[in-house]
Image 1 (tube, rainbow, N blue to C red):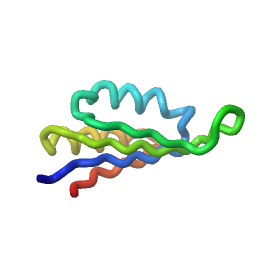
Image 2 (cartoon, helix red, strand yellow):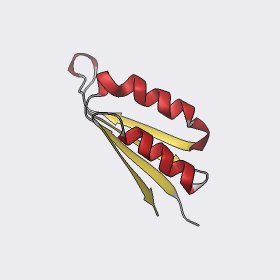
Image 3 (tube, rainbow, N blue to C red):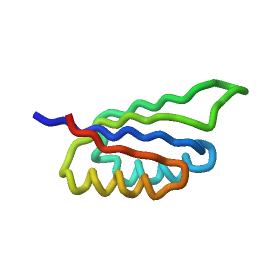
Image 4 (spheres, helix red, strand yellow):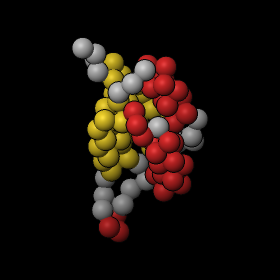
Length: 82
């Protein structure tokens, strides 16, 4: 059984996080598992972050989610099948 993952790296977290979150919420039924990581905390919070998503659903929809995220400046998403 193949598994689908989406790896997202965001370089401008404070600027693009709201737009990215709106997209992820819109496509939320495809997300089985989500893990978000960024360096730093409190006063040393960084602009970069990584999100790992385990996805379910039709490949066409997963590909569209990937495409929409990549349209955001400072966001790089990659769909991975294992």
